[in-house]
Length: 129
Image (tube, rainbow, N blue to C red; front, side, top):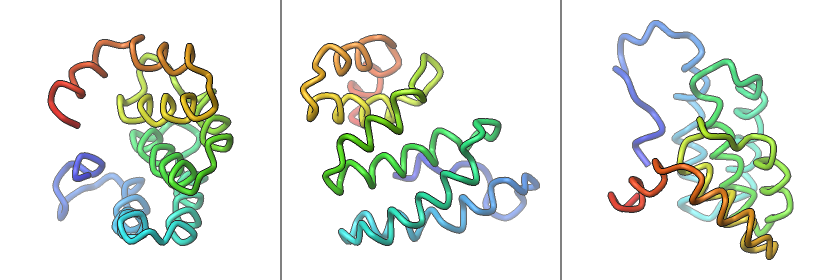
């Protein structure tokens, strides 16, 4: 899970990372503890800060929200959130959560396409995560 935040913690001059660095530990703790209501609430706030796609944290914010929705049993919401967000530049973890939602919704061909479309995903699988 440490792959979400990178860079030096003390001297980062990018102000757009501040909300992410502040909210991420609370979202992660909520997910780990099963407090999906809090994790979802915070993830939604983070998503709306980064949803424009301009920041390098956009995919990570979407991923956190998708994970909250999926773990809450909301495969439809996960699918709706990610359907328009997945492309060849998306991080592999995002594609995996999308594929899980597709599988739950019995959209097997979309799940397969999301996983096999990009060879970077297979590299993540080989590395174990």
